[in-house]
Image (cartoon, rainbow, N blue to C red; front, side, top):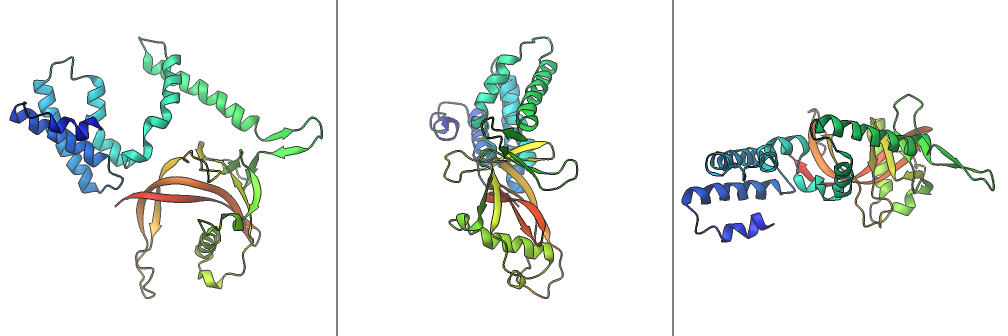
Length: 287
């Protein structure tokens, strides 16, 4: 915040070259902090960063041009192209994890290898706790089995819906503010290649859960929806039919990238076919 709003007001005593370089850095950070970016915006960031680094490498003392400054700005255009808008994946929510790894990484000669091993050890322990021990829990008093994971497909590597907050409910419970039944009808209409109005009445029974395992990655959603905690922010690439309102159009859908928050994981079915679906809040897009 100080770089964007305070430093530009106190740089009047510097040389013209320094002011130009500093303003280039401010402009790059301002554009990179936006929630909506185009490829032209990223090219602008790259040009401004190049101008700043040309000044920093030639004018700044070595003790000021640190590796943190290098990685924080020099690789910024690449990060934006790979991950999208920076506010979507802010690292503030990862401070606890960063502190955990900082305490575990002790090697000064080979910190890369040491950090890699610590990540593997931590991931293995959490995989055991979340997957091996979380499949079924038996209550000692009653002997009842509490299911804490649901497999929608029988194939290996299929997506899995996990607890906590794993429960059977109805789409009526999510009519406000999301109108879940409307999106459910649109989903099955697209799957069956028919119009939503042509579908028969759908089953309102669904099963919701907090976490999903997909492609060996665990994702969290904003469940319960009244929670102050955010779900996982992700980048998705979806086919968009920009000519959907034109019935005579034969142009294929175009694929676009979107960034947003995972709100809800739920399973629903249509004539015996069960699907695990994600309700996604699109907060920004990369055109």
